[in-house]
Length: 336
Image 1 (cartoon, rainbow, N blue to C red):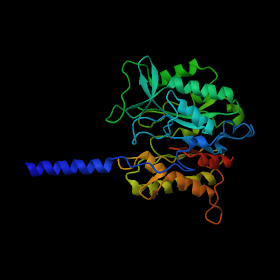
Image 2 (tube, one colour):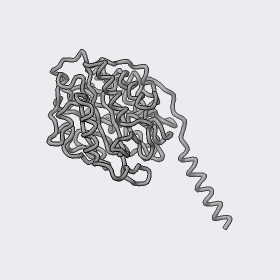
Image 3 (cartoon, rainbow, N blue to C red):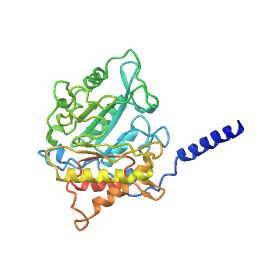
Image 4 (cartoon, rainbow, N blue to C red):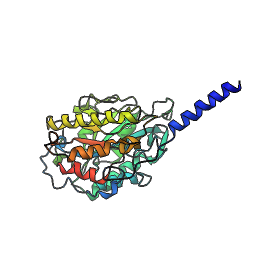
């Protein structure tokens, strides 16, 4: 009996060591230095006729995930009530990833899994409205996802509420003029807009259900096939099972960058640099750990390399990152 208990104790101890968060790598030009970038008006100088799809757009994955510990946090914490979003927008971030739980009163709260992120959807819209009011030459693209599956580790939507899409429609109606209207109608997906059509507006790229399926016809028609994980125009291989697999994630990001760069400029590509698992936290995948290079420093190096090393990148598409550094944001924007 004692031997069995000792074996169990050893197993628990071993698992606790394996699952103890490793120290984050030091902040650098690619990682955890978002505030060193300042690009609140970078779209303003671009021509109205430029397609949204042709842009190189820095973005954030799980944009407001700043609470819950090392396995949940994906962004630097610049404050609750979506103050973190304002910091990102001022740095130049123009595509965001919002995960919502249906709450009582037919409202949305922002979650990452089971963890409430001390922000509500009203906070998100207020921050977007304030930013776009002050910077009318800009536009912000939103991926909105119903977060709760009701499974272990996820959240559960409040019972007795309206459908996710009906609640969303209520938010849109309550903020007239904030959204680019063609992107927030159920009837049909919107064509890819030009900058002139969307300045001062929020563009809904896609509305995903809790398991990744597309809800009705909201968003851009091009993303009708955006489901959980990767699809034709989206690289989102988010399962990084261990630190060694960060190398695979780096390669997935690189290959999709090359696809984007060589692709039709009238089509929009979305490249998630993020990934995680029990044995590879978001901070480790982004910044690196135990001698394994993270995706962020790899990406900055790849973008800085000249034609003697590989075919140059000419367009990055939308790059949705965890813990982006200021110089990495600068570099993505330089392609515009």
